[in-house]
Length: 510
Image 1: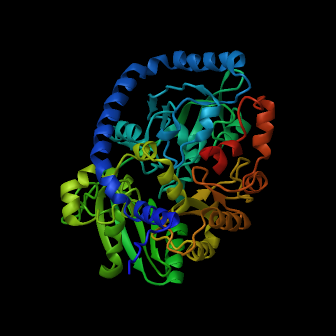
Image 2: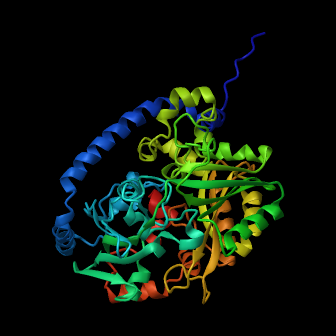
Image 3: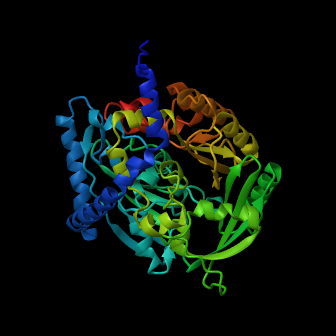
């Protein structure tokens, strides 16, 4: 008797391939790491050359005039398309490649300079492509910093103004937009205006979260504060959900709150609340230079205090600012599960992290599809009183841990983020990044469930992330009243898309 050899059905074969790609991506990334390192070196060298060619703080007005010229030429050559910046979509930090750019008219905005540091007024004026790494390096050696330093070096001033930026000092200073004092913008007709809370409050409040749909940012003036050498960081482990939320809220809302507050939630009932303060000294034996390549990933370092108890360390300021960068918060554990092993860290830790833009650029269609359907990156901004319900919603829907909790103050303003309050209101950024552990995860269904919850508590979704909301749902979440009036006043229709048409899922994936 002859027994036929069993050949799996095509869907079985595809399932195996998908399983390997999702769960053993590290095999591909291990080949990508040295390529990423070489690319990073090339990109850095190229950026220095481009910077050298483009950098000319004294010629800011000439460079702005070049942007104006392109906008005016658009009137002749636009052919019905709307305008956007010419920066390639794969260079953005957003996980999407911004497919909409291929259908729009590109305007090159090559403005890369720190223009002026005014220590008397305590401000710094920057062009939009100034990065956080560039700005903090410039200010740090002068003894200054900006009040909010978002995590990744490649984030730009323009992206943080037109989108948003947050950090663990935001409970005192708000979002990135709230440390800006004025914006210089090229409008749809090619004219240039400078707006501030005093000179043109309607435009000033409309620019943040507008995603370049009102004009092209050509400079921003940002507040600066004195910096110090270290952050004194206290770790408070908590093993009960109610106690964790209570401790977190207490540290955020007390009158003498620390300079920095955050919480890493490791499971429904386990988390570590952290508070930090600027200091110029370090107690002997308590310095931890967490930025070294061989050090444990920061979120794993923090996790150990769940078992070791409360602790205090001193961390160099720049190391603190970028404590989550090497592990891309904790996304790297899904890419290289053994990456925190001490042997790997010492031998290959200097290659980490892979360049985000290169990861995007080298994604094939299959990997891109699998990444979108087996992965979640979301930052939901919710009132602090709804934090418990928010954590329970994410646990029920996706069960991704750790979760990042970052508090921020939202002042009353008439812009997109209308808190519906007449006074400062405290919110929390609930950051969820990784592979869902709940079985049967459906990216669109789950995200829509979470979006609905956030709308119901009068919260907001960060626009860099995947959004499945309808136009009507999007407009219910974000206050468009002032934005709509400004678009009409500045004749933006037909020249710039609406913000929804740049941030919804369909626009970004094509």
